[in-house]
Length: 250
Length: 225
Ligand code: SF4
Ligand code: FES
Image (tube, rainbow over all chains, first blue to last red; front, side, top):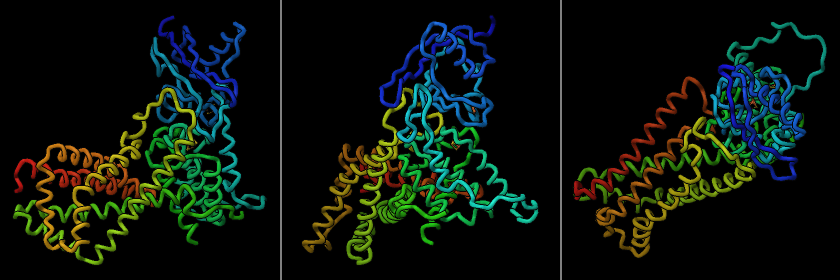
């Protein structure tokens, strides 16, 4: 078929957290440029199952760029070569016939490998559990105009809220720092009056948990911002730096 | 929500702030150092330069600042070491393929190496000038001490000139990341001012090292006698 590609995949195989992994080479034929990267993995896994081999474990859920599950480090970059997309939204047309593609899991002490390309990102959940919420009694939603919020703040909070918790920021950071993720959550709530009430404890607790989980220290290389599929800005990190400082001198 | 956090300075953000603040303090020293040394460009046989050096050697405030500076430098270097060790631990298994240049500058990823080079350079630099000055201060011959002549002598040696130029190059790249980075760490990130911070940082990282580099070069080429 015209335009279809033959590729060489080098994929990280690892039985469990306890065992050592290695790159295994798999040639794939006849890949349509319109397939998503994950669909190509489906094709490969079908072939492996037919041959009686163990299929490659990889995370995915929504396949439309909103759940943040599809963590793959592709040719040295999280979610592959395109900006602003997750692996599920990456199409094979971003590669060319004959390419060799190396696929590895997110690598960070805080994200241990479960199997092959799947990693345990529950460290993020534990950070969120420390303050990524507001404590309110539920009830009827308030009238929208009861709490006036400046448009710029609302926009910034909305942009911070776009974080899908995919972990690409940690994966690409040379220090495995989780600053972009944590700061997106801190900003989203710190910018809104509903979140201000608990802002002091929130930033302290979330930062403490982030450190506890073994993420590295931010050195402002800015790699996270470039690789974040949702375009979360470094401004959030600066805002968290301010919030954290102010919270500590209070 | 109750507060369960540890001390500020033990947190990753606290440690980073110390890096940024000590870095800015060291930058402020660079400005003074650069301005005073620029007296050699007057080419007056070192009269004003030596007066400046004498002033620095005798002024009590400067003497205190010298100690503060020393501690600032130690804090900056030690903290960097602690952070680097922690960061290495945060990724025990490295990537087989990592495309760093796709998302960041090489010097931003090499601050540790650049800093170590600077530290090595500093050892050489202090052994050239600072130790002699200190000795003169202690044995009371500081009034006759001629730093200018010392400088002329050191920079007639091409190896010394090369070492200084390399050290200054490391300084330039270290500043190119460190200057704007310190502001980000202090939380100064605003679309309105980011351009200004970045531009000032870049200009500073080019101009100051260039002035420093001009000193050994000018002496070596005999423009300054
Ligand atoms: S900040 Fe971006 S890269 Fe990091 S978890 Fe959120 S969406 Fe993913
Ligand atoms: S599978 Fe949900 S973002 Fe990719």
